[in-house]
Length: 166
Image 1 (cartoon, rainbow, N blue to C red):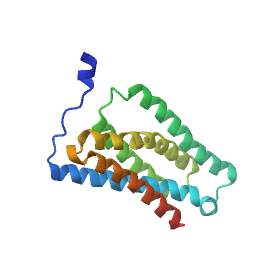
Image 2 (tube, one colour):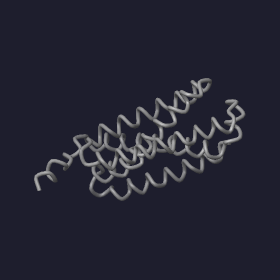
Image 3 (tube, rainbow, N blue to C red):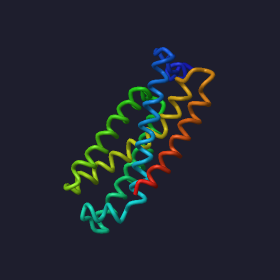
Image 4 (cartoon, rainbow, N blue to C red):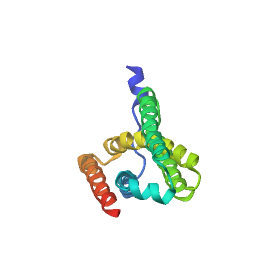
């Protein structure tokens, strides 16, 4: 019973307006993440041509993301009850942004791109697991379902936008 009390999160100390701002930022990061996933899936031919990748290197790029997701899932299952969710979600968001930036600016180094996609996959798991948890734990009492619904809608809209970009 004492372990359960240790794991309970303290109430979110931010006022209502700042909670909404954090939620809007979370929605923006989720949108960017989903657009990235959709663009990668729908523009295979263009990416291979622009980066001069052969099928083998592009396969490594895709595999690195999947391996990152598998490793992230494994570690999330082990540490899900011991991590500080707010700090983890913040760190994961920053790392995802840095990997996306690196992916777009360091495209002439295939090894760096593959490593970035692996790290992105690792962080992807935490972002997808912790975003709804954030909404459930820290949203205002009467807005929890609304926040989770909006996150789901943002993911759908992001995927549609990403598919239409190419």
